[in-house]
Length: 160
Image (cartoon, rainbow, N blue to C red; front, side, top):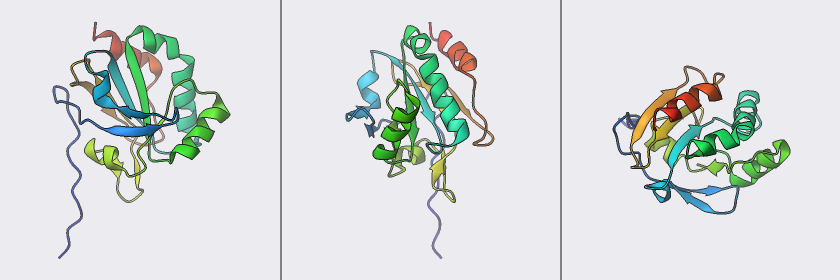
């Protein structure tokens, strides 16, 4: 009998966030560990580029770009889309933040948010402090829901 691979548990508040390095739309590899000691990080897993809720969510991140920066937070949106698709998505909507490609689904698996039968991630957020520890997480009940920026910014404000 062949068993399906198990999904690791989602990192919980207090856990060290799993490190990763992913390709970005800015033509640079981005490593989570590169922010340790420098900035807080908001990982924002989103299912697929060019879908309505994902478009709204990422455009909202761009709209509030300065507010996230004032919170000393780097927003890292992650999807399973390939970099060329993410570049087109970013350009079409004039997004101000780099998008990260988890094309091999390794990071989505490590964070326990990959939907195996759909092969894309759930919509999920992990707020990571400067020491690299998860301080807050939220996984949406459905991929059609998203957290408003005000809620995300309120969680970020607690880091001060």
